[in-house]
Length: 120
Image 1 (cartoon, rainbow, N blue to C red):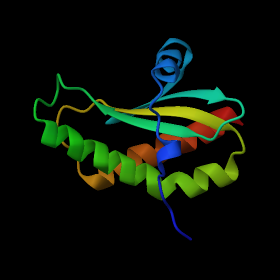
Image 2: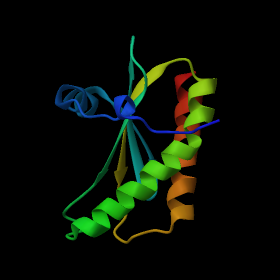
Image 3: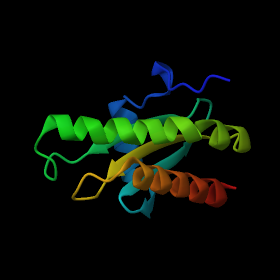
């Protein structure tokens, strides 16, 4: 089974992102903070962000976003199969230093598990 993160599952809509910040709920598992909002009639969309204030170098910000995307991509089949509901997800990196992939992956996994538990 191929586990991918196709273009139509990426969160790009400014309107959806604005709605997410205004109405969304949060789950914090250091060093990742998850903003989520249930939606109707669409597939789950996910976005990833790193504050420029904490990491001045674009190379570092992009590396952290790649690590978060990979952690989400690997866990996506487990979250989508268990949950028939669709969400808008935004993963924010709140750490001050670049964490190892294992730390990022464990926080993404625990945030997704908490999301699945709270949305049921």
